Length: 393
Image (tube, rainbow, N blue to C red):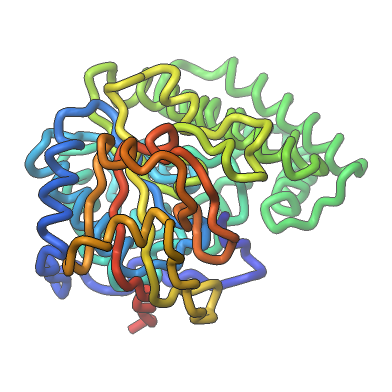
């Protein structure tokens, strides 16, 4: 669920911060109800459809994150996005080096940073992280995020520079081939890269303690876990990715955020639900959210989004969203209200028993589940729309 270098060109930080206006709060009744449930929690996981193409959900999430930071003392925001680029942002801040809005936008990644609904949040996060009000992090070990300012730029050369010059060129080249999706598996190059990573790690282990060493240790761990999954079947790949995301989250809390941090996690509901086994792909494996649930219990909150009708964006195409059917969660939620959005809390979801819903995205068939076992709250829109794409200026 990320954009590869060959599939898109990401426009990062293309709107100057001084031009961004905070949007008028959207769906305020649903927003206020969600805030009441989320504010007291230690970890809030804010999902969305796997297609990442729902504009109203994105606008709601963007406003919600800002409110949680401003009013509920949340002080860390984590994205289902490049761990590498967020590690570089953290290193720069630790060293007192500049961090630009474009860097934050780039690290957030192309699933979101090209959308107008994201721009006010990007500005807010940049200003807050530079001021020291929050910390930012990424939990994804996948490589190849188009437009990434560090992981597809300076990172390969920096890590290769840990090695003797005659070895550095080979290792830098094969790492770049992994980043650009040019390695086949199995292949001699994969074996070569594992050897390069081991040599880099020995060099890092011999370096003095400090932010450079800690950052490079984590970079190498993530590259290694991503490399190990190359050639795996889909189930094995997703299982390993969930474990890597959980490992990164635990590391961030233990080493960068602190045990008392209040953390917001942003991503897809497939990864950020308490239990995704109702979805066929995750029927036999744990998703990231299930690890959070095991560790945090009721101090974590899992929020999802869905809609009864409308349209969404898939890639660059706008598609019609299947209309909710009688008996669906969406139809039941909106049946007794004329509001354009409804918030369902835990007790509301429990009262619905099992019902079909398009919670994991409109491009797949609705999933039937006891939704109170999957999520703690759901925002249901009467009509969804695609996000508004922005262009470079």
